Length: 361
Ligand code: F6P
Ligand code: MN
Figure 1: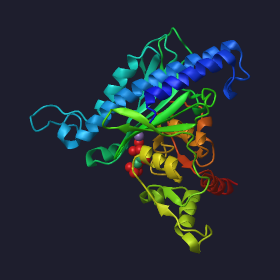
Figure 2: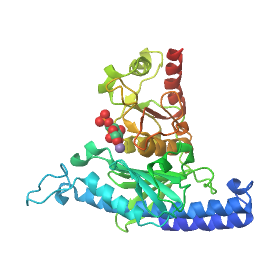
Figure 3: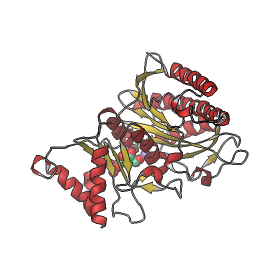
Figure 4: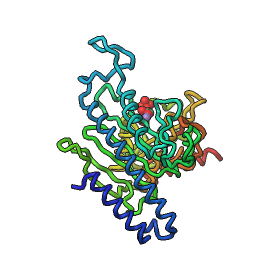
């Protein structure tokens, strides 16, 4: 079994050799300066992923203790001993924030739990965005949750990082991934194509509870182009736009409808769980735009939910759109911006896009 530590050691050694010889695919057209820059970015990114993993293991430990750890319920509520309780999503946020701001490569951190970005080392090369505990309605009921992360380059070294520094499109991500806290703890991540000199694509590790080490499960994960499994919160049907209703009507009609095949619904209520299923066996995940609150473009957050998941899905051969437009093309205007999300098996995402495009005409 390859542990995460061994995996990163080999990756960095290969990278240094590639840099010296410019041998790998991603290095062939690079100058010496470019190649050195890529290697520096790679080793800093790996260091930051290790920090995320270390905090993630602590979060997994707390979740495993469950109701016994006194971490369920509302923040600010009193526990049975009359002490102030912290909700687990606040604890997870604090663990990640403390660990990342202490990492010298990290120039700043942005979290779903905090209104503004938190500056860290002004000389750091990287910015990290995270959703500390995705799927928060699952926390109290022993169901899957996860941590989602996105790593961006920092372009203002020497200066204190601000919100505006984070507003880079998904295509600028150096790496992205998640930790899934489910029946077992899983780590999945991918590097941007330019850094992925080994062409390992999306990789997945499982936490061995006996050793406390992550062990490699799979590399080069690939999402099947077709699927009969879809994930959407159907209770919002009446709020969707006509093309989304039409898509679901056609799916529900099964073999007797235009799609001529039966579909199956799966909804984990944690995006991280649904995306994990799609990486494992394909499918489509949708959180569409709806008319419930016209001020919100969708429910999910662009920068620490949609973008990192889009990088994973695209690097595994799937597609990620807002129904029409590619998510990683969005130029963000706010670190907490929301976006509609349609991602997963390529051909199914295209069916949704075609319906939306037809009805725009
Ligand atoms: O982070 C938002 C989130 O919890 C996602 O993880 C999940 O997919 C979705 O919201 C669940 O939404 P709903 O409450 O509508 O089922
Ligand atoms: Mn979330």
